[in-house]
Length: 67
Image (cartoon, rainbow, N blue to C red; front, side):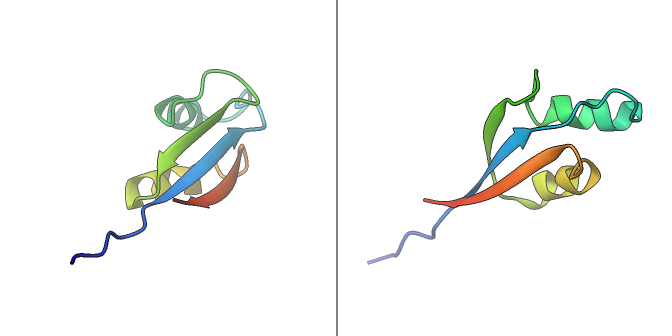
């Protein structure tokens, strides 16, 4: 039988406003699916999401979830 690989997910919470930061940071926040402060979204853990999080890590709280 084939074993199913565990898919990791990231729980992201938008904790600090992007006002005063560059337009790229604001666009990255929107691309991650955030619309308002203190909103939480769950995303698949993959290199593209990790790259976005490196740019806005000072605005977002990251928690790793394992299914």
